Length: 284
Image 1 (cartoon, one colour):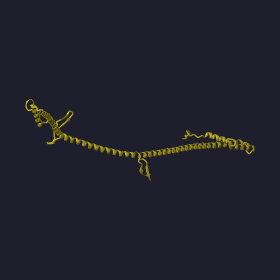
Image 2 (tube, one colour):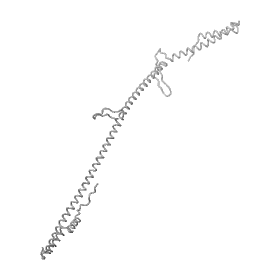
Image 3 (cartoon, rainbow, N blue to C red):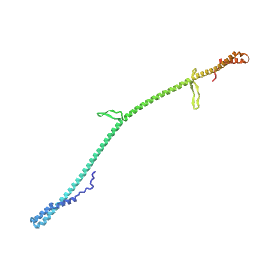
Image 4 (cartoon, rainbow, N blue to C red):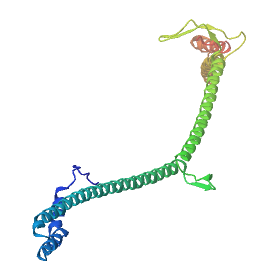
């Protein structure tokens, strides 16, 4: 940027001196007038008694005219020179302003271009490539964060639906398990109420099984009793069979088992047969 002049003073003196020197040099009108006057003296065109007066008046008039003209010209010259300098500075400043405006416009154009590129990049990243027909967006490519967010939302919805289905299935499974436990409990053990479950066990149990209803545990108890009766029957049957075999051997050997010391075998066999006929179910 151009530097503005710090002084407003006009350079008149040096210009005045230059003009005065030019006015008094060998080719100036002052010297030519002086030489012409001297020649007139030589030629006696001017009377001797008027020579001094004419010379003094002429030289004074010429000198005064030269001074006046030189001063006026020097002032105009200095003023014009200062005007030209100021005009030059003004033009330089205007050029600087124009340059700054051009630079500013270029920077603004670069900023707008960069902002446009950034906006395009953001739009491409967010929405994917666009198909534009006559200023209207007609389609988008399957890309960009918006498209990915839509896919992610769909996946989340599908995942939540699957999770809901799994939750429903688990609920049904739980209900089925609960139903099985209740059913098994009722079938196996009947109904009970009024009980309390604590850390130390179950207290206050009241049997609420309907009258005439036999649970699986009741049937198993009956079966166990019958099995125990069978065990007792088998034991007496085995004993009776053993004693019968002994009696058979004795009869074959013609041993008297009806009287004497051997009669006890027959008595034992009769007692065993009676026990077999009246087998008693063991008490549990």
